[in-house]
Image 1 (cartoon, rainbow, N blue to C red):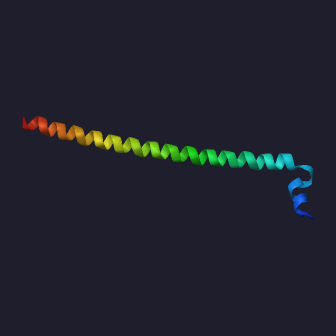
Image 2 (image 1 turned 30 degrees about the horizontal axis):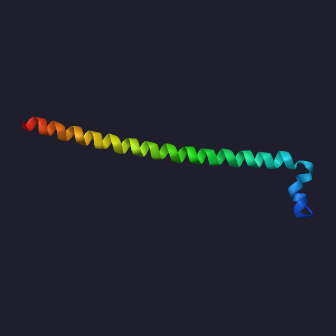
Image 3 (image 1 turned 120 degrees about the horizontal axis):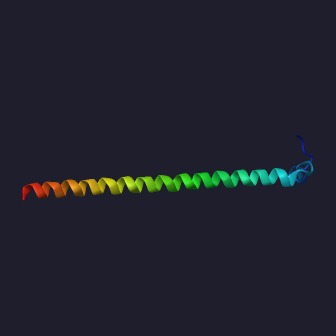
Length: 68
């Protein structure tokens, strides 16, 4: 679609509320997905780190127990 001016572009031929709200909802959804993914990734890494540390503590405790 061809627009004569920037204001015509923003007006979108009278469909501006629908067009710009669709863009806004899409951007919000994408930002939400990115944030949720990043937070989940961090949480999983933290859980893996904690599990590894716990396993190492359990292994050391068993070794100590076997030497007694």
